Length: 121
Image 1 (cartoon, rainbow, N blue to C red):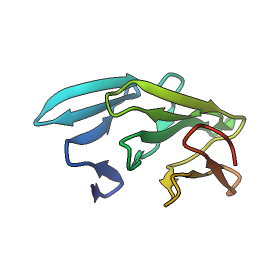
Image 2 (cartoon, helix red, strand yellow):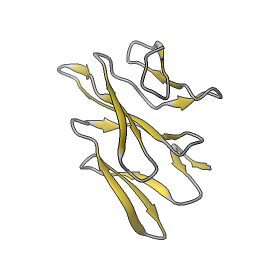
Image 3 (tube, rainbow, N blue to C red):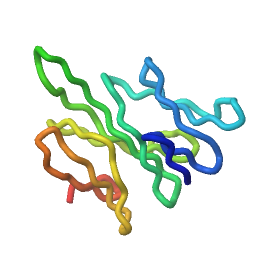
């Protein structure tokens, strides 16, 4: 796995989030799959687990209303949804611990942890 700036690139390709909030896996300049993240004002940089699961979070922010809740997504290596986690919080880019737990910072500057099975720890 290679990290370029904040974009994670694995050996089989790269990940791109476009303006329509669609996460795409690409390799050799061709789309392998596309995943639409609904209700996303922004999408954070993904993290890739050892089993190939791709984790990322979404949310939105405006000066008028502040942070709005989004979701945390787990996407299988083939681009299908593994699970999503909704909360009243907005989460930012995930990091994966050695034990496989997904750690995310919330807009309240606290760290939250999810298990690979979607349980809040």
